[in-house]
Image (cartoon, rainbow, N blue to C red; front, side, top):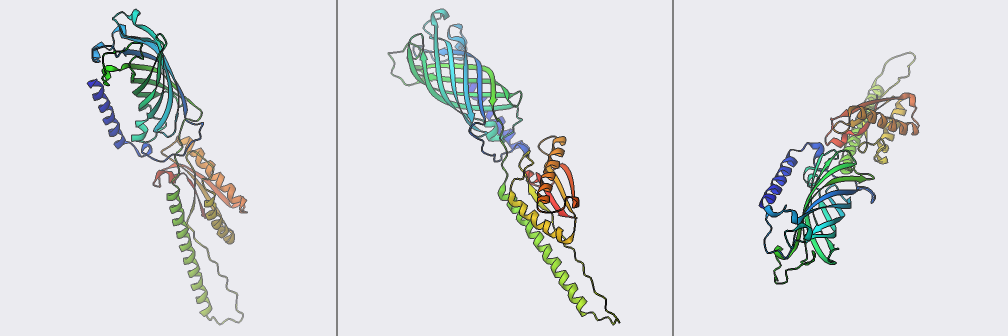
Length: 386
């Protein structure tokens, strides 16, 4: 048991160390809430179990754990759901061939049983290192409670369990399980009870140690979408609007100064010629933001800024440049190029709906970039007057 505790401490230390060195793309961030039907999973395992009865006077020793008269093979199945990337629940059935240890004859000890437990799962890989849908190894401690029945002796017992579930991802839908767990049940669950003992220690409980190997299959949507930091994006949009207003004010002031200079000029001409004054407003680019791997506009309110810029371009008979971008830290280069093009086209279509002629639009796709911090700001389209 000491070796198990030391191993658990070592694994926790390793996880903390990895969390400190995790890249930005894997560090903690908020995720969008998925629907009730998302993030479900089913599991099926082959189970090797070692049994220890309350009627035994000896304490559990690791050297005796694998004696044939106390071990047997069985199976387990489970249905569960992740409510967040780090916290989930599963209902687990375990059985069916067991041992009630009353002698060192495994045939005499043979019995049949089942247990049914509700277990709370804690994905430390996601909780400590941040959610990463491509992570291969997930380290998941859990605790549970439920009931068990010994079919051979027609006895029941309430029980508790604790374990370590390790999953190794093969595909986005499929993973291999390695589940090591320990359960304790009320004395007499295995059909025998140490009636002479009133102790509440583990020596007076029926116990089992399970090693399970199997598969996890994820049902429906199995990933989590990173949430947009709307406060930060709102602040960025406000700053761009402030910059645009400042530039408009500078342009109006310059126009007024030129008008006054022209009014003060007195040029003797037999036939005064009309003076034509042309001004051009310089504007800052307006940004429209998008969610991860999406080409639909995240907030229609951002199109208000685009509409103001379209009105200025219409008045000046100017062209508009629409440039699409993607986040270089997620997705392949080809996917980011395609995504930036789709985003640029989506904003261009909105501009045309505002009455701006498509022939005065220049559309380009910049692909994946890493020019803005935080990284989600790079999932955007900029619109500017040429």
